[in-house]
Length: 204
Image (cartoon, rainbow, N blue to C red; front, side, top):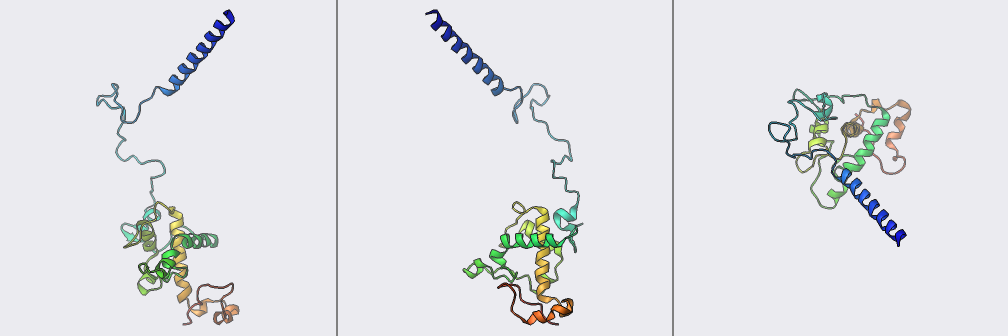
């Protein structure tokens, strides 16, 4: 009987101890957002950040990098060096996000257009071939017309790489034949290697 009482007492003590520990963690000494406080004169525990405060990671001092503009004017060049590997990533991102509407050639004949939805813009029209690259970054970021912006889905650097690949697509269709190495010009009139690919540069 004594042993049973001791066992019950031990269980009760452990339960009480566990409950007490849980309460300490559950009711940690902290203020919840917007909770009242007697410490400050306005009665609120939440403090208003000083004017000009910027959240970590959102300083964005480089206007050209984050907006594609400088003093409101579209930039004419990518604000960092673009390597061949960068361009390949731009192609990869383009194929994921842009080809459904714009097509792999950037001619506006993506799969959703072929299925009867609204015609997408072709990058090979004169107006877009003459646009500054900051324009493409801005449209990718903020959207244009029926196109949504991709700021939430595509990181800043990748947006620039997509814009760079768009420029490469444009160049592929209007590059002068003299820009092709002499030992490879005979390939211009042959079938594309590996199946479907961008048409050869226009001879002019």
